[in-house]
Length: 205
Image (cartoon, rainbow, N blue to C red):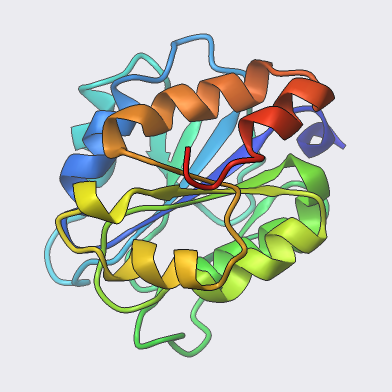
């Protein structure tokens, strides 16, 4: 299965997330050997400009996720407003109109739980700026299945509630300022198992 061969980063963002996502995506290398899935809370009214905005900042292909898309290394998929985004065990994407979770759809909790079940140690959850606590509910499953959790330092978040809620679960591998998240993602992908363990052994890093 293709999704067994590369890391998949699920990124959760809400208030202040557009700027945070731009900072991260613009710093990812064009030869990135990972797939990125983005859940950003927004209104379903009006066109979704996120893929176009991010595409202007990177040479990686950026597209809104569609039902049945296959995970692909070096690709950024953004969740469709109003639909949950999930990863199936066969490495394809699923869009779901299931009820909102923590008042939002798409919800990062839904994505993270599906990543944990489908990708195991290749799943990495990234929690960015935002209100409330979406994302925190899926972190234990990510780590229980051998994956990793990266959280933005709340001090660098426009809205610190989501990062704080994630940290409070005590299911976080590393907390880094916004401008260090892309570098941490890259290091995690390039590291061997022993070095990967060191990279994520200090949550205060």
